[in-house]
Amino acid sequence: MKTITVLFAAILVCLLSACQISEKSPERVWGNLDEIAGKIGQSQITTDQELLGSRESEDGYTGSYSAKIVSVSGRDVIFGGGSIKERELVISGTISAESGSAKIRVRQNDEVNEYEAENTGEFYLELSLYSGGNYIMIDYKDFSGTVEMTSVYQTV
Image 1 (cartoon, rainbow, N blue to C red):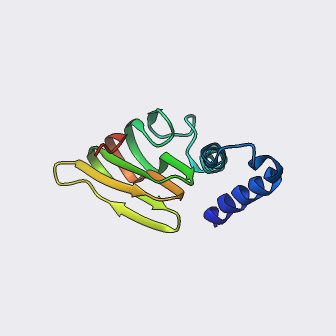
Image 2 (image 1 turned 60 degrees about the vertical axis):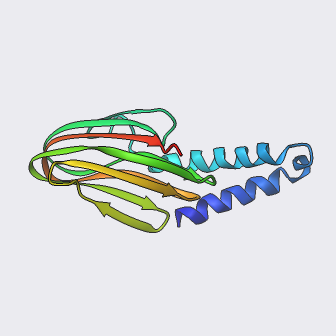
């Protein structure tokens, strides 16, 4: 559903600016469409004031997150957004649970995958994000403990 909204907005922008497209380079049009998709997609990210933890984000997709939580259930949507560009990310960190559980949840458009940390509490994910809505979250269920996460662009 959100993918359709992003696509509709992108098409609408193209139609509204059709008379000016000949004056813009394809890269600039592509960048403008990606910016619009990004603004629409930001509505799904948990605001800094509502986060159970704290985030330092560089561009919406990369940065760091940390949380020290006592007996909480909920979800932090930490990184991601809407985009027409593909991205390669590495997500890593630790989950140290005193009680309850915390899982990494990755939504790519309509596809949702959940990941658990290793027995050591560490996790490492290489993600190929395609165009559309891509979100990286932590789901907490009666969780007490700490979470540390970083998201960086994958280098080849």
